[in-house]
Image (cartoon, rainbow, N blue to C red; front, side):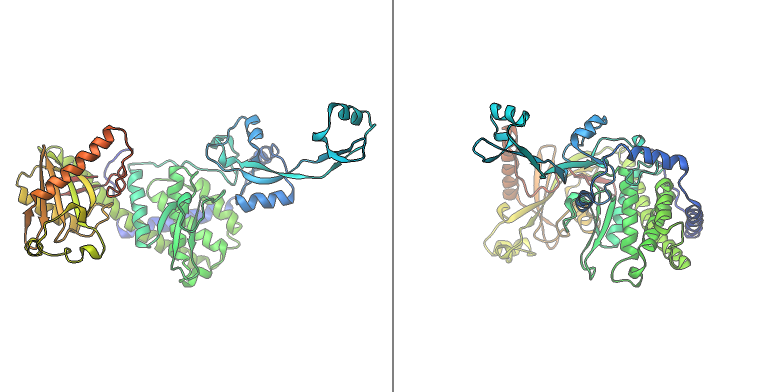
Length: 492
């Protein structure tokens, strides 16, 4: 996708667009109805599936809410599909009657215990037999748990996954970062369902969920692991709208379920459309079905105004992130024209706890007066980065690092702002320096440098031997975070 400059609209232009899109969606919602052809296609598709008993239907819904088209592993295979690896079966009760017979002594036994002679006597009705009802646990899988493609499902299939296309110049990664910023403003985490803090590890057919405690002190948004990337974007915005508009602490939390779903899906539709992603094929049927083409919608004007305000807030936040990301990308492009060298950077901070109480936040001279030197065993490696820099003055580099890790820290930096008693280790073309952050300036720490080099050497030896290296100080080793500061770039 092209990484061209995103044209940010004015506040007035955004509001006009939001109102226009919302009116368009409402108009389509009120007129929406399934065509006879689509209904027939859906009926024909569902006729291929076994109609389970009411008891089993309840069991299925309790385990996989919203499941519609389910079949056994064997049946899916016969239909030409396979169950996705790692999917958990939905338990049902299968009717498997047991045959009993009476032997010559009159003892009743299971047919599985019969000898060949007894089986022959049973067949010839010399020995009596009877069947008793019995059930055992079987397993079925919903269509969403298989490799069935979007085009294999009816257009109006309720559990259909969507792979929306993004038009124009907008970068999907920008949009994802913007959504994260919105979630941060609302103080709510977005997680995959398998990582839910509340234990919602299976959402069934639902694409996502906004979960909150009664007093809203705890909340999260969970997304279905089976979603496509663009489905996740649309669903995240839908659930963020719930979080913004239907928090238990707000007056409008008492809105009816149809009104809440109308507001959340309309917000998602408008915001996605603003960034070139048309979700109308899902959004219009969704809000039409929930509101019965608008009949069940309460206080329509009030609901629309709340949607408009929410869309404006979300778009403003996402626009700010997109603008910053584009500026950062442009700065990174500029740095490619500068003759820069790569340096390795490690940040050390004192470990928490009483043991380091007298070492924390004190100057280098105070530490020496206590009869101590900085020892690496008292420190934790907070982060390792690659520093791309054209600056050659070591003192200036340290000052820039100090400023950066106070004002514009990398997103995955888990330590506190760089402060007195922290240590910065820089490796430049084989030369290593360790610098103590003092109350004024920095102090060279040659012994700490040696300790750092020894740890790096041992880790390298373990890696060369093929050992599993447990390095808790290096968080999210595979995750990258990039940051520009003037003509420097830090990369995790």
